[in-house]
Image (cartoon, rainbow, N blue to C red; front, side, top):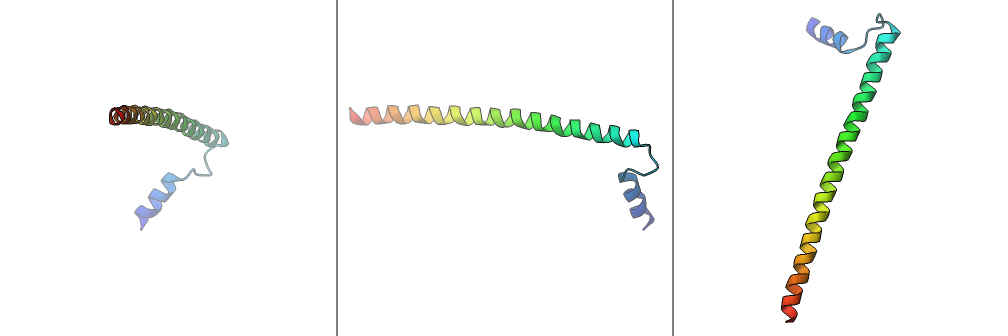
Length: 71
């Protein structure tokens, strides 16, 4: 039971810490969240570009197949 209380206290910001420390920790957390958003945005744009490229290749293939069928 003591170990559960010990881990709970260590994961929370204790009220005895100065407000400046809490502000710095909050600011660091916000900047980390912003960085994660940027990285995810880049990843999503890359994924969309790959999907568009594949769809374009399929469309070209369909045009080629349709042209051969009509000959």
